[in-house]
Image (cartoon, rainbow, N blue to C red; front, side):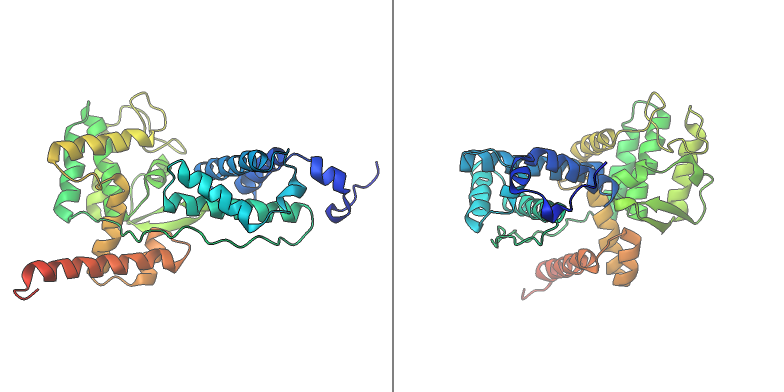
Length: 317
C-alpha cells in the first residue's frame, strides 16, 4: 500500500472537497481523547464548529471544504458574530463561540500541515461580573432545607452530604457526583478528579465527613469499590439535575436569591476562605484552577464585599 502524501502535498482538489463537517467531527474526537476535554465542552465546541460551517455555506453560497476554512478573512468572522448576536446571543457567549471557532481553524490548519493565518477580529466585550457568594448562614440553611424537603430520609442525607461537599470543600457538582465508594470511610482528605481528568487532594472537615458517613449508613444500596458514592432513587449514578432541582426548591422555600445555585456554594467556599486570610496559590490548588487568573477573581469579590460593608456602615459613606 502506497504511503499517503504528507498533508502539505495534498492536491487543492482534495483539500477543497474534504467536507468541513467531517473535519469538525474529527476535531471533537481530538478534543475528547487527546486534549481530555469534558463531554459537555466537546459537545459545545463541535456544535459551534458546525454552526460556523453552516453559516459560511449560506454566507458564501458554496459548499465549505477544509481548504476554504483557511481562506477566511476578518469580515467572515465579523459576519458570523453579527449573525449570532442578532439571534439573541449575549456578549460572553459570543466571545466563547469566537474562541471555539479560532481553535477549530487552528486544528484545520494543523491537519493540512500549514501554519494558521487567522483573520484578526476583536471579540465582543464581556461585561465584568463577579460571583455572588452566599453568607455562611444562607449556605448552611439551604443545605439543611434541601435535605428536609427530600422524599426519603436517606435521600435527604445524600443531598445534605453533596451540598456540604460543595460548600465545605469547594467541589463542582460534577466532581462530587464522580466520587466512588472508595472514599469510604472518609478520612481527612479525598482525591477528586476535576476538569480535563486532573486530580487533586481536597481536605475534608469533620462536619462534611460526618454527613457523608451518615448518608452511607442510611443508603439502601451497597456502596463498594468503584460504584458511585452518590446514587439515585434506583441505585444508579445520581443525575446533577436532581441536585440543582433540590437546591431550587429549597431556595424558593427560604426566599433566597436565584443566584444561590449549587455552583454558588463553591464560590462561597472560595470567598470565605480568602476573607479569612487564605493564600491565593493554596486556594488555586483547592479549587483545581489551571490558571491563577481564574482564582484572582475572588480577590475582587472580597474587595466588593468590604466596600459594601463600608457603604452601609460608615456614617459618611
